[in-house]
Image (cartoon, rainbow over all chains, first blue to last red; front, side, top):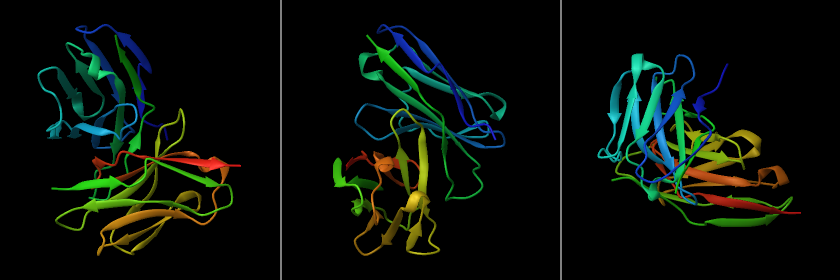
Length: 115
Length: 108
């Protein structure tokens, strides 16, 4: 089966610009996650979707970050305006969501550099 | 509140010797526990997960982890390190609380 797809793989922008990332989860996976991984740290969950709905967005900086999942499939994560501290790898993951001990499947990530 | 602490940021072992990566966690209930591996320039991959069926969990590539409620900990071990094990390893609590990672270095 195809894995989690993300694009672009790399993005360089200047501070105060906007940027969007796209994620296509594994077919049939109801749960979708966006993580931010700053160099030298573990991934930090930004937002979790279950089908179309948001399960948890408590760590999403809502003044500049937004995310949506249309029709319960693809998802986009947007940053507007970007700050220097947003430089990180943005990871998308998906899971079946059928039970509590669910394995997450990760995409390759988008490496964002804000200058 | 839940939390996870990986006690070593770097672990260096010689090829063929045992590996021990330590993970302590805090939770008010019995959580789900995972270990993920991230090889250089590759995506995160699940190594193993604790599902409360058994305290000793076997994963891929010869890794295993033991759930110890009394400590509480979920340390990752492997009897004999291989060069291909060089990677970063993350301990995860309840799916979304990630440790800072332990970089495993294998010396030839």
